[in-house]
Image 1 (cartoon, rainbow, N blue to C red):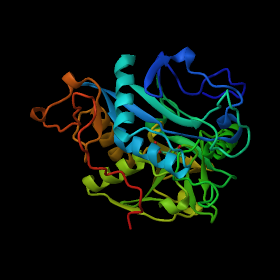
Image 2: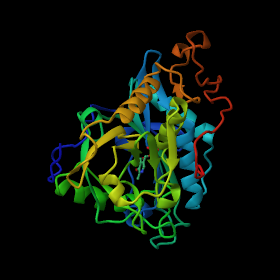
Image 3: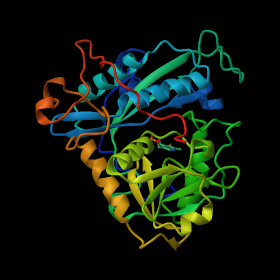
Amino acid sequence: MFSKDGKTKDVATPRICDLVWHNGEFIKWDDARVHVMSHVLHYGSSIFEGIRCYSTKAGPAVFRLREHMQRFLNSAKIYRMDHPWTLDQLCEAAVDLVRRSEMEQCYIRPILFRSLDEAHPAFGVNPFPNPLACYIGAWDWGKYLGDEAIERGVDVCVSTWNRLTPNSMPAMAKSGANYMNSQLIKMEALLNGFAEGIALDDRGYVSEGSGENIFLVAGDVVLTPPLSSSILPGITRDSVIQICQELGITVKERTIQRAALYVADELFFSGTAAEITPIRSVDRITVGKGGRGEITAKIQKVFFEITKGERQAPGDWLTYVRRDERPTSDDGFTSRTLTSSGVENEQALSYQTAPME
Ligand SMILES: Cc1ncc(COP(=O)(O)O)c(C=O)c1O
C-alpha cells in the first residue's frame, strides 16, 4: 500500500477526467498548468475542497455538494481571496464537469489559489498583487486508507506533531498550507508502520487525523472533538452527527483526552476520502474488540446506503448529475433538483459550522 520511493500509489486512481474546469471554461487536463514562480507554490496560498460523487441506480450523485462549496467559499473568505464565483456557479461547474467526464463515480477537487501575473510579476509574501485562479478537477479514487480498511479497520498512532493552533493557522479553513501539518503527521505514521496519525491540539486534547475527523464510542454514546480542538468542520462529521440523531444514538461534542482513545469501545474516522473507517488500534493498543464495532457498523451501513441512493438522507444530500435519471418522490425520495440553468433550487444548509452545545 505504501512505498517511500513514491513509485507505488497508495490510493488506486483508475481514471482521471481529461477535462478541467478553469475560471468558467473547460480546458484539457494537459493544459491545466501553472508557472513555477506562482505565489501558491512558494507561500502555500491555496484553498480547496474534496467532494465525492457516488454511483447510484439513478446515475452519479454528488454528496453534499452545496455544503462543500459553502466551506470552499468560507475558506476563501478567511484568506481574503476576493473572487467572483457564487455558490450556485461552483455547484453548477462541478455537476457539469462530472456530467462531461462520463464517470459513474469520482472525487471532485475544486481549488482556488494565488498564481502569477507574468506581465507584472510579484514575488513577495503579500498575496494581494497575485491573480486568483480557480480550477475543478475530478478523478476516480479508491478507498483512501486501503480496500480492507472499511471492514477491518486501521492501525493508527497518536502523532508527535500537534494540530495547528486556532490563532496560527485556522483549521476551519481548508487551506493547502494546513496540509503541511497533515503531511508531517501522515509521514510519521507511515514510516512507523501505521495507516494514519491522530494529532492532538495545542492543549493536548484529541483533534483529528491528518485528513479525517475522529469519533469515539463509549458505551452507547458517540463523542467527537468540538471545533475548538482545531478540527476541520467536516461534512462527513456533520453527516455522522445527523445519522446518529436519526438513529436515536446520543452524540456529543466533547474535548477528548488522549488516554480516552485507548479505553474507547470503538473509534472511527470520518472524511470524504476515508468515508467511515473503523480504527482497530491506537499506538498498538487494541481498541475494543479490535475491529469494526457494532455502533460504527450501524452508522457506516446507513452512510453507505445514503451515498448509494438507497436510503433517504436526513437532508437533501445528493445532487444527481443526470437530471433525467434522478429518483422522483414516487420512489420515496426527495432529491435535489436542477433548474434549466443547472442551478440547484434553494436548499437549507444543515452543514454545521458552530459547536452543537
Ligand atoms: C484535516 C481534515 N479533517 C477532516 C476532514 C474531513 O472532512 P470532510 O468530511 O468534509 O471531508 C478532512 C478531509 O477533507 C481533512 O483533511
